[in-house]
Amino acid sequence: MTQYDFQTLAQLYRDTLLNDVLPFWEKYSLDEKNGGYFTCLNREGQVYDTDKFIWLQNRQVWTFSMLYNRCEQRENWLQIAKHGAEFLAKHGRDEEGNWYFALNQAGTPLVQPYNIFSDCFAAMAFSQYSMASGDKSAEAIAIQAYNNVLRRKDDPKGKYTKTYPGTRPMKSLAVPMILANLSLEMSWLLPETQLNQVLDLTVSEVMGDFLDKERRLMYENIAPDGSHLDCFEGRIINPGHGIEAMWFIMDIAQRRGDQETISQAVQVVLNILDFAWDKEYGGLYYFMDADGHPPQQLEWDQKLWWVHLESLVALAMAYRLTQRQECWEWYQKLHDYSWSHFADPEFGEWFGYLNRRGEVLLNLKGGKWKGCFHVPRALFLCWQEFETLSLTGKTTG
Image (cartoon, rainbow, N blue to C red; front, side, top):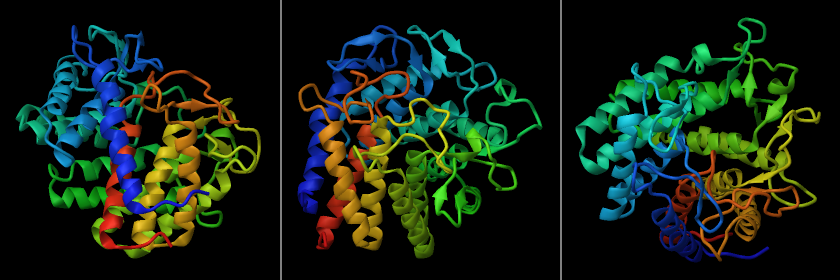
């Protein structure tokens, strides 16, 4: 296992973000004719599909706005964010203010607003964009989208749900975990009382309901009373979601000085890693069955970019907050695997999908689910974590 020092790591993440990943999206993703972004880009950056998926559009607005706000006020970053925000403000919502799932290239709706995450990422995007630009109309869009999320959180798909009512009700980890992160993103726009109420609720739900106290694993779906369901959906473990949720919880806990919750979240991260690491080929599985049965997802054994990137963020944050040696050992293990398998030094950006053996499965840099979000966000956050660690004079143990 390679040994790393914090300053070298900070420089690696910074240089890769600024000189490799962002230039890829700046060069290839802008639709200069219609507005918005192309996300379906092959390895070399060529567009292979022109449909526009709302949560990826909003995620790219968020990315460039966030970097303008937190990294450096580069005018071209603000203009790229504006390029997407104006397209989305014009085309992204139905008459009732719900955000569509997909549009065609020109902005005509393709897929109905069935997915609450379109609204989540709209709130994140327009919050950061309004902060960057000072645009009050963007601020209003952010608050409206956030209120949409709160309104729909207990019935995320509403009339678009496919399940038969009442037979097997369940709730999903995805909703409270994204609400936790979203609320922190929106903190500068929300009344303190409302913010604290939502954060209390999400932490309580994630750590109290979805966390199995005996196994110390995060379940993806549970019954409304918090019990487990013996079915495909009830047994599913999504390692990436569980680990990403834990760094969201750590983020809230450090804001509140809650060391007990930080320690609990860190331990959950370590338990998920132990459970989900492929001991034969390396890397983390995409889906697993809690009881060892065959998962229903046929792609269960693929290795995905975002799962590994969110794990790197969680481990870097966990080590800074606790100095636990296990966190540092796991970080190095994940770093070696991720940087040697997903990064593409020849054409830039990262591959998204590997087979179980770690070979590139899809020769793309963006698509319907992968856009300008997880890679740049993780690179930025890890850069900040290691910069902080290098400045404190702490050692790698």
